[in-house]
Amino acid sequence: MKIQPLEFEKPVLELEAKLEDIRKQLQGHDLDLDPEVQSIAESIQATRRDIYENLTAWQRVQIARHIQRPFFLDYVQLAFTDFVELHGDRLFGDDASMPAGLATIGEKRCIVIGQQKGRDVKENLLRNFGSPHPEGYRKALRLMRMAEKFRLPVVTLIDTPGAYPGVGAEERHIAEAIAVNLREMMLLKTPIVTVVIGEGGSGGALGIGVSDRVLMMENAYYSVISPEGCAAILWKHRKHAPEAAAALKIDAPSLLKLGLIDGIVPEPLGGAHRDYSTAATSLKTSILNALGEVSKLSTDKMLNQRYDKFRRMGVISE
Image 1 (cartoon, rainbow, N blue to C red):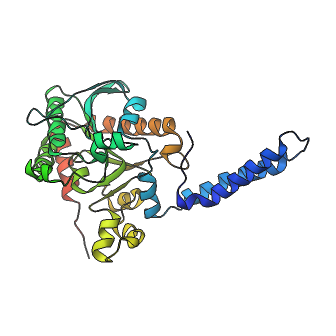
Image 2 (image 1 turned 45 degrees about the vertical axis):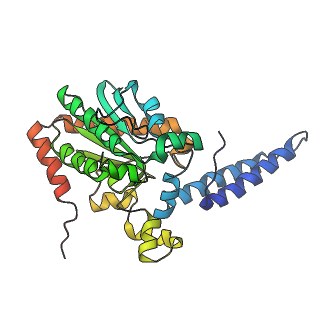
Image 3 (image 1 turned 120 degrees about the vertical axis):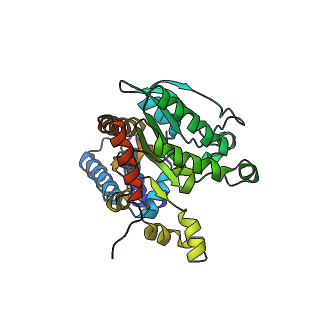
């Protein structure tokens, strides 16, 4: 799969083009350019490492939105086994943007719930561009209650620009569906682990994000509003999205420092879209470690810690 480069990766592209030119020159010629080839290859790695070790918040947003980034169902296929998708909220219908079902991770049977985007027009229309309807959140809650009944842990993978704001969603009470999820997840008597794998947009993300451990992929973002939305309000123009991203502190390192997430899931150099297998292995390990920690707690202690965790958010001291 040919990786589509991002704007800030141009220095790497220039070196890769130079390396390709040298390799073409070597074809059919008895030339010894191995030292030069090795030198450029090392420069490519060093340049990529320098770029990815010093990413800005806006650059991480661009990576989180990369069309080739692994989505929910990619991780289900690579990090989980025995996945059985379950459909419908038993009230209105099914929501393809919020697939969910039974699965096994490691040796643990669980309920896994996530938000799914598409990579082409047809799939994006089916998945509603990863923006769930009210029935998606109600389906998620139905499965969480089933997990509680059968004493199964819940794993949620967040990847949405936000809940769907259309007329139909408003008519079916999207805000109420999310609010009920926030309340019920806080009281759910089974371990819950959440990972933001790409975009974590506003209440659409939080509707499946109230959990005992909230983790983020290294190049994901989690925010109350998109950088473009914030820029349009505060700077009156979307072109200020990079400044807005920095001000919002929506990247994983900033959120970990603020205590809003519990851990960062490492990604391969260059982003998860460059190596699905390594990214999935890292995700699986992080989820199993988090589930192991939470499973050791009594139900009362787990619920108290979950409550305290979210009550501490937003508290400041001057």
